[in-house]
Image (tube, rainbow, N blue to C red):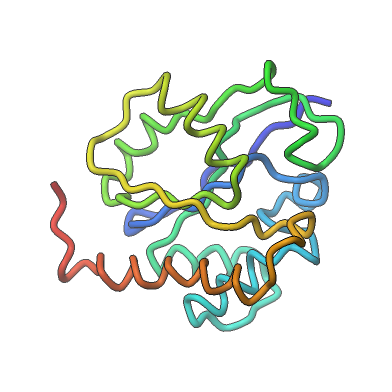
Length: 178
């Protein structure tokens, strides 16, 4: 089945961009990033950024953006038979346009990958084919997908908390764009 990603959830003050590979089946049905109830993304973000819990999706996105964090996916479209990254047909991948996005949002200096598939797809389909600004920093985090059960939750959360460290280091007061 041909699947398409969502538009970026981003605002002008974003300094960090978190990238997934492609929304899963439940996320596509709900038209929400990380909608699967067992996905750890929203609980990790709430803890990492000390955000209040809210069931309203648009409120969660707004809070995320207020903290300087945007969301998107590496893939614009692909064929995928199921919901897993391993179900993506590699030859069908079309990447999102990061060259344009990063020109529109020059404050983004850190890109975090939610899992190895997002990082691998970015390196293969974006870095090799698109012109990106210099000085970007890339960080792979363990996937928050319920399929990634081999890493203990506490260790994954500790890795995800690196985002808060980066945000603290790149606050508008001490961030100088190059």
